[in-house]
Image 1 (cartoon, rainbow, N blue to C red):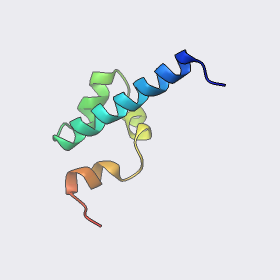
Image 2: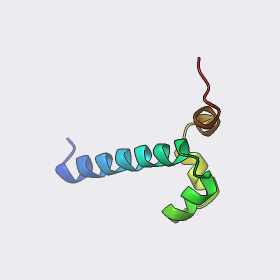
Image 3: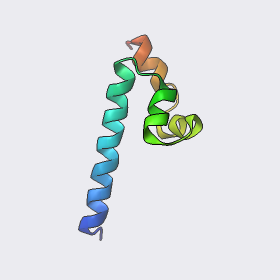
Image 4: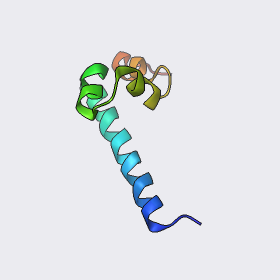
Length: 62
């Protein structure tokens, strides 16, 4: 049974992902976002589903 701290951490992770997506959509380079978060570019890449950055920037419509 998750406690309140676990729920708060999950919510914070979700908010972080949404902010990352907003930055990507606005054209902020992935490397710059990684620097702002204090993580490597490789870690930043692992935080997002494969191909998501191209999809956001390229405006892929399926």
